[in-house]
Image 1 (cartoon, rainbow, N blue to C red):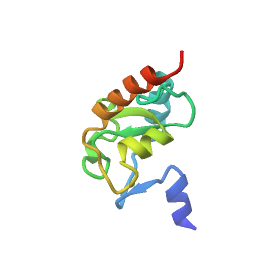
Image 2 (cartoon, rainbow, N blue to C red):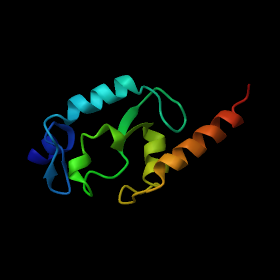
Image 3 (cartoon, helix red, strand yellow):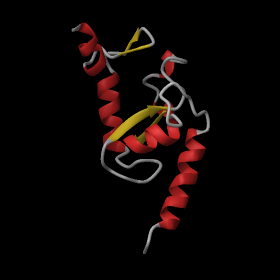
Length: 108
């Protein structure tokens, strides 16, 4: 049962390293201050993506320069290229390009 707590609780573990006890507060504050997806602009189902992954640079876990708000769809499709094992090092550029194209394509 410990794996369930690790998966859903404050003891979330990534690549064997525990999350900082401050992560949930940083995450909640970030979403409150950045309440729109950086890709599609949606305000539902937001998550916080680490631009440089936590498992690569644990020291950047709480660094706001390393965070971006994204909806679940943009997180999966753009930030992880539809594979959780993938790291899109161009995610900020790709999110911006998608945001521009998405807003242009919207029927007005």
